[in-house]
Amino acid sequence: MVLFLEKNLKYPEELRLKSKEGVVMFHFIVRKDGKIDNIEYQKSDEPLFNQEASRVFSLIKYMKPAREHGRIIDKECTLPINFRLTNW
Image (cartoon, rainbow, N blue to C red; front, top):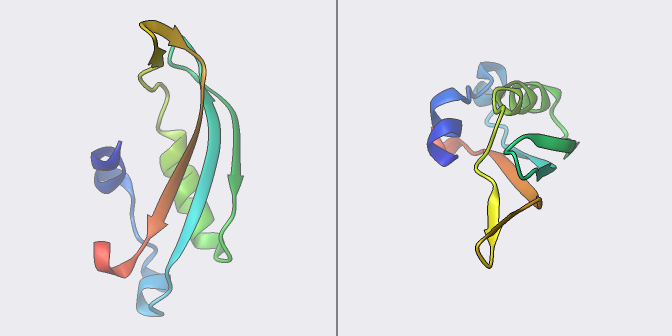
């Protein structure tokens, strides 16, 4: 997942020039079939971060489902998408 984000996430140039940083938190459920459901996100103070994080998150169609005691289960997850200048 980290490699996917690194490859696809683009730091908004306007915010890079202003040295702005932020985090957009996504909460969702990965279903047994790998589909992503019940997506909610906690916005940052910067609309450009929200737009970019939403764009990249929308590219994720499926995730590997969770296992518990050998059984595939639905799993609630949280994914922070960090915009930090030290990462770029």
